[in-house]
Image (cartoon, rainbow, N blue to C red; front, side):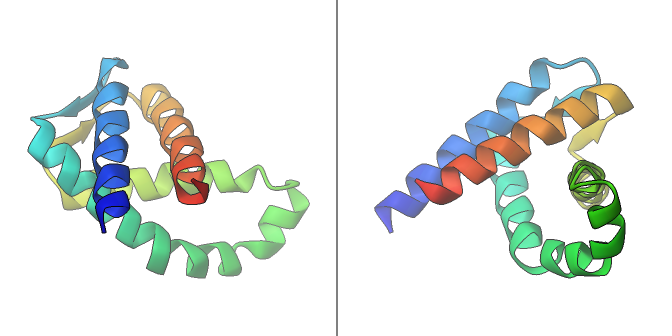
Length: 109
């Protein structure tokens, strides 16, 4: 349980770190923790279904379509939580890459 809370806090700090990109804003650390929780739930339940449906496109693009899926998931979280704003698509794309890589690392630690 302690390890889960530590991972959650680290993930929230990573989300707060992406706020240094222009066009990415989080109101405060409490909302970053909420975003981390919602993003984790979406990554567990929704993202596998989307990946399965997009498997043919993913195979044709040699896995690069996963970047688009991560980008879409991040915009879904921004839509669900109004205190998380993504106004610059390029910064949001870079933030989705940072968050996806860090999520993958945290998942395997």
